[in-house]
Amino acid sequence: MNPSTDDTIAAVSTAPGRGGIGVVRVSGPKTRHIAQALLGRVPVPRRAELHSFMDADGAPIDTGLALFFPAPRSFTGQDVLELHGHGGPVVMDLLLQRLLALGARLATPGEFTQRAYLNDKLDLAQAEAIADLIDSGSAQAARAAVRSLQGEFSARVHELAERVLELRMWIEAAIDFPEEEIDFLADRALGERMTDLRQRFAELAETARQGSLLRDGLTVVIAGRPNAGKSSLLNRLAGYEAAIVTPVPGTTRDVLRERIAIDGLPLHVLDTAGLRDSTDAIEAEGVRRARAEISRADRVLFVVDSADPAAVVAVDDDLSRLPPDVPRTVVFNKIDRSGESVRVVEATTGDAAGSATTTHVYLCAATGVGVDGLREHLKAAIGFHPSTEGALSARTRHLDALRRARAHAETAHTLLAERHAGELVAQELRDAHQALGEITGEVSSDELLGRIFTSFCIGK
Image 1 (cartoon, one colour):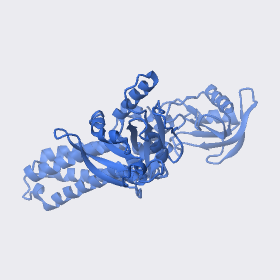
Image 2 (cartoon, rainbow, N blue to C red):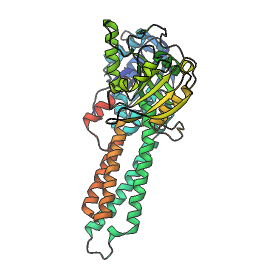
Image 3 (cartoon, rainbow, N blue to C red):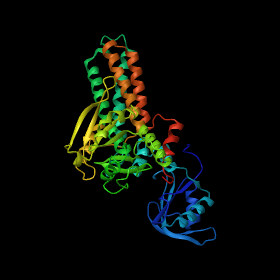
């Protein structure tokens, strides 16, 4: 974690496997020494040069491009060497082993980006955006990650923090100079600034929430009785034959997972075994796994065969067996056989003692009729807006920090309006400012940094 450490790190930065080009990176104080031994000289800065990469005996390991970026004008802020060779795993490993023999050590996951952060080349939100860009599941998510990487999210956070700081200065001036005839705490302009601050918190929180949805998406479990059409619905949502569909009940035995996107919203869709009691050990295990996934889902699509009167009558009883805290949507499938019309309606389920409003979607998974209505329902259920213009990549920890900062600002507004309690208002604003600092890394801990950077891939 110490940016002044004397060690030099190296890693293969391209994905494992066979490819046309592979990249190995080196960063640290021994980079020039390594370049001299490996290439015969240190390359001209920021210019791609063709070199043979030599082993300890002077024999070539490979021939490729070498790029040298001297400190501090590099990604990590240290001397950096990039070696672009042929992308075979054996070649990459031979080259990496040569670098380790010359004094480098194998980099840990995310260590290059960690050094960039520690050397003030980017802030923590930008560093996380790098991983989000690599892992993005849709074009919209990738564009949002690029915006955050370029500093747009950090700039919004800094702007908000600056306004909090200005209010702190105003409040603390009123506390420090109570003998002044002007009542700073009753100043109309101060109240207007507090109102403006609350509005800006709300806008940034919504932008970050949309960015978090683009990054994390929604985990949807398709559940229901056997032969309700669960696998057909998965195939229709995925756009191809992801699951085997037969008229035989119990065809799906294990959990099938597919990653799809709806207007940029990533969906992690899980097709599960039909929910029923079974003496078949394999099917029973499939049902157990299905219930386990249901308990962890963001939303359950409970599929019902609308052409089966017994299944329709049993809907309330079936839903009562689901975890009560998991949102659910009832999908009445096979309307081509039942004669139902395509629609999305809100319905009351349960008895008088425990009734709840549940969305009912009527469709035919086999033909695709009504599936668009289900897609629109899923987006609306979590407040996702397909337009991603200006969207910013954000993580759960960012949302949590914004939530806490916003709560402190709201408390400060209440204390100011109702009690004119300057000291308490100032403390709430200090806490809000600190929470915002957690987003960009101005306020951080070694434990937090460790969790963030170990989630990166090696070589980044």
